[in-house]
Image (tube, rainbow, N blue to C red; front, side):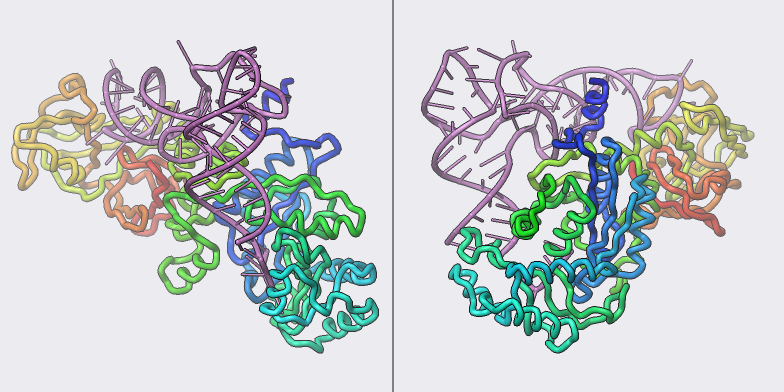
Length: 484
RNA sequence: GCUCCGGUGGUGUAGCUCGGCCAAUCAUUUCGGCCUUUCGAGCCGACGACCCGGGUUCAAAUCCCGGCCGGAGCACCA
């Protein structure tokens, strides 16, 4: 009862048939670091596993060194990204290092007469497939199939010359299921295992075997892999295995990023359009981390999205809202004056402002100033000669000249201005640090409180600007914008 | 062309398995108000949805049929 309530709060529907243990896996191709899309797989799988106290497997489906060439650094990055998301895998598998297992199983299938070597070109086979009729290779004798297989392994055939197909049903009403390819020849060295192999399994074959061997009980997969279950079911039937429970989910599109794919990202980084995988404009986890988006926020975000089967298009605003809930209570506040303009205050001999670091916490920062301050150009622009406004937590002033900006001291009474829009932030003209904020591709220059240099690698709020992560301080402060 | 799947407010989501407690949940967005001090944070409030048409039933978001719309697969990619 209580447990059930907890599940509901976390937002994920219970998993059917979970009573005999839960083993789940996330199986990326490491052709780049994890993106928000991968994060969904990592988070939800892990969330379920921890809900049922099961086992979480990270499996690299890296069986195509040609079209989906893995990136060596991405393997390690995936591990780091999982840990960052508090989803450390219980087991890590590299398909490319487990080829023997796949060979062993396909050989069994061939001996059972359930797999055969096919020499048809793609075009030729497509004709047979569309016609719903078998090609001549389908009836090849078992011994001959095995001989061809041996020759494939020893490299006697060229790429594209021959493939191994799993026998399904050439007359199946769904053309997508008819005798699919289980192995093909790829004579390009693999980033991880070199030129050790030139016969590689397809995803459907590799995944079918691995899920079984590792006792995977529940599979979460994209709708694009909808046919995998029915394709792989043939193998499971031949071996007398039970297929895991499958839940499909739709594609997630993020408004702000549009359609992105790892390979497109990679190209744009190589061409210099982006500075690297951690460019703050990108939807990679390393980039989000750099901006100060917390892993907890990402987890909450995906749990809230749920596991629906329709394709969705969601805004980063939802992620930002989750992140804000987490960081707002702890992020220290600072003044960041962008486009700073110096204002001379007549009749003010200077003063000291004591401002809470965070309205919900103890601690304060102290701003000591003389009679000259800086405020944002965008603020002063809104005032006219004679207007009175307040320098937040300091004093009230009246504009007596706009160009050059000169004001006169009016008093300390907050009540005199009261309304929020007449309160602006400021900094002492003589005591501040230059600062540049990376915000959505723009560089925003300004000045910040000197104590910001003690916040390296932390997320703070620049008042009336937004939350940023302080990245470094070398002559000037560099901050990366997260969100408002 | 063949084969699958899905359609709840602007955006997501709960509810649909076992029809009534649903004049429909929660989050976010937008708007409005509040705040001894963030016009860009916070707090409070409001607006806003069951794709359409039939059928079954005392009763349908929930079941059935048809339509419309959207998505996916039919690769020697994952």
